[in-house]
Image 1 (cartoon, rainbow, N blue to C red):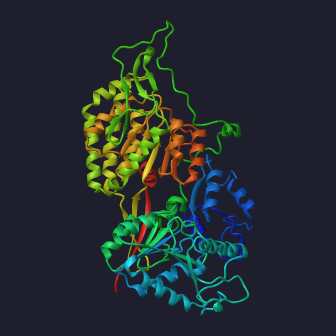
Image 2: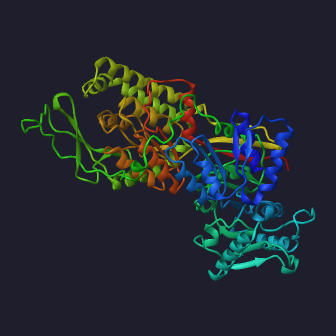
Image 3: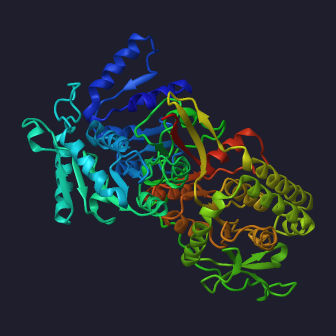
Length: 636
C-alpha cells in the first residue's frame, strides 16, 4: 500500500521514480518491479533499489532528485528534513503517530470495542495510524474496559497467512524487544498491564500478546511515545473539552477516531482534534480518493486524493538552484545581531533630522507596545535624512508575539469566512484612505520614485481585495469514497505562521504575505523589510481602526535573520515563511526539523510581488492551509 501511495501519483503527474523499499519489505517491491516490466512500462520510469539506510540518504542527497517522499519514523523524517535543507527539493513526510480513539458514554460500546480491536491490533499495531491511545468517558470506563478484556481473551494469535488468525507476528526481533521494553517500563511506572492469555501465544516465532495498559498518567512514557506494536494505553475524561485536550496532548497529529451516537458532538470533536484524518464511529478506513497524512510531528504533505497529486508537481518556474551556498556558509554563525548605534553620524559629525524624533513601537496583541530591549534602528532617507526609528526586537519579543498569536488562533480560525473577508476589506478601505501618505513614504525612501510608489500602493490595495475574496472559496470538498456517508476534505488553518519579508516592494510584499495567511484563519508574527519597515509600522493605526482582533497580526521590527532564527525554533510556531538569503533559507528549513513545522522559503531568489494569477493563488493557498479528511458514516 505504501508503495502504491508513492508511485501511482508520481507517475500520474509525469515523474519518474527511484524507490528504496524498507529493508524488511524488499520482496514485495521486487515483485512490483516484475509487474512494471510485464506491463510494458518504459525502462527507467520506475526503478527499485533495495538497500539499507546509507543507500536511502545517498538517494535523498543526489542532486538530480527533485522530490523526496518518505513514510517511516519521526526521527528519520527529521534527519531527511535537515538533509534536504536549502536544496529546493520538495519534501512530503508521512511519519509516526499516537492516534487517539475517543469513546463517549453515548456510543454503541460493543461496536466501539470492535473498532478498538481493528484500530490497534490490525497488523499487530505496526501501523502509523494505529489507535494506540484510548480515551474513554469516565462513567462508562469500567464497563468498556471489561468488554475489551473479554474480547482480548478471544483473539487468536498465530501465522498471518492463516485467515482465522486475528494477530500475527512482530516484524523483527529488534521491534519485539522494543515492545517488550515499553511494557516493562509501564510496569515499572506502576501501570496495570493486562494481556491476552499467554497460552494463546505460539511458542515459536516473534509473537507478542495483545496488551492493555491502564492506570497511566498523561506523562507516562507509554502514553507519549509511539510503540509500534500491539500495546493499547487507556485514559479517562469527564467532558468533551477534556477529551479534546487529551487527544491533542501529543507531539503527533496523524489520525484519530470519535465514537458517539451524537452526530453534532462527533463533528465538533472531529473539527477540534489536530489530526490529518478523523474517522467517526470507525477507524483505519482508506481510499485513493481521500487524502491521508498528518500534522505536527506526524509530518506534512498528503498521500492519495487531489491533495496527494499536488505533492508531485511544482509551480512552473519555481524550481530553485541546487545548493547555491558553500559548506563554509553552513558552518558560519547565523542569526546573530549587534544592535545599531543609536544615532547616524554624518561627515560633519552630526546627523540630519528634519522633524521631531519618532521611534515606532511594536504591534503585539492588537496594541502598540514597547519592545523588551532598549535599542532602536535608524531608517535613513536620501542625503542621510532620518525618516524614523524602529524598535530592535529580540528573543523575548518573539516569545510575546507568538504567545499573542497562539492565544488568538482558535477564535480567529472559527470565525465565519465572511467575517474575515469583511475585516480585510476594511483594512483595504482604511489603507486607501491614507493612500497619499503611503505613497509619499515609499517615494521618500532611498531609491524611491513617486510613480513607482503610487503603483505599489495601488497594487497593495488591490491585493487586499483579492485575498479577501478568497475567504470563502477554498473551504474543501466531499470526496467520492466507497463509504456510505460522506468523506469531507476540510482546508483547515495551519495555525501560527512566522513570516520574514524581503526588501523589494516593502509594502506590497508585507500585505501579499500576511493577507492570505489571516484570511484563511491563521494568525501570524511578521517581520517587515529590515531596509524599510516604516510602511509596516504605519499600518499599526490602520489595523487598530479596522476591527482586526488582537493577536491576529503581530509585527516585530529588527534584524530579519535574528528574529527568524527564534521564530523557526519556537515550538508553537506551526509554519515559517522566509524571504531572504539562500543561506537563510537553508537555516530555516534545517531548524524547522525540531518540530517539523512547514516552511516556505525563496532560496535567495527575488520574487516579483506585482505578479498575479492562478499559480500565485494555488501556491499561497497550499501554504496557508492543511487538509483534514473526516469520514462520516451514514445509516444505522
